[in-house]
Length: 310
Image 1 (tube, rainbow, N blue to C red):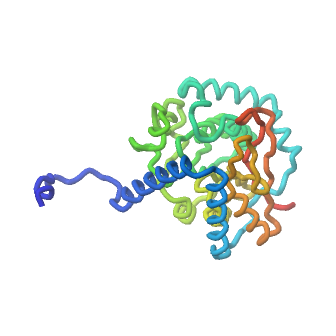
Image 2: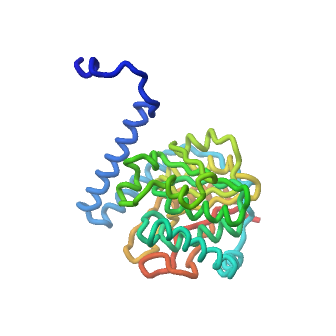
Image 3: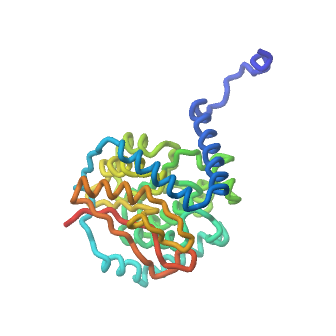
């Protein structure tokens, strides 16, 4: 009661609903518990437990509809090789990296998507020139800044939306925990890209169900559980423009490790395995080995394109 009496009668400043704030705090606590478990449990045991839980949840997920028609028809590895070996794109990338490094310092210390994958994202967006881009999973904005810079250099008038369940620009956002100097929005302002990017604090499903617009390029890098990816792909196809592209991150072909540390994120592979069994027209094209290093001294990438059989 004393606390209530001390509360000022003036209108409170606008703030997020109490349920949203509680949900955000709960998410941070869950992440903290997961971090502790990772330190206690042997890695192989922890991975198998996560995979088993994911498989059970995916098996109980109702069948979704996958409207494959908007997907860009499958293009082979030759097309990817042409993009990644384009000297003009290399020059553009070099200039972009110099510009972004001027704000961030060494980008390898940013965290998030590894430097080699950021380069691949830049090349793909620059080459495909989407007018409207959607990123699911903003996190610290490590990929966001490169996607936005690629849009600016390749597609005048293009814009992007980036979605995360957390308020990534808040004072206690992921950027703070990783020791970055500023949140994603401020970084974009310093790079002259803030007018090109809109931030959305929302679950991917809520955003995709209520998007009300079409996107030419969708990058899925949010919750990697098999159930979420399975449902996300179905919803993403509904808002994908004609001949659009869906790019997945953390897709481990065959559910096998890609890097020396032996880590596996099995959710996206399990989800797409089910999707391709239910819809034979949808195909996955892993990007394989890139011409440049990604991490741990390797050229492997977990990026994969979702395409439609010609």
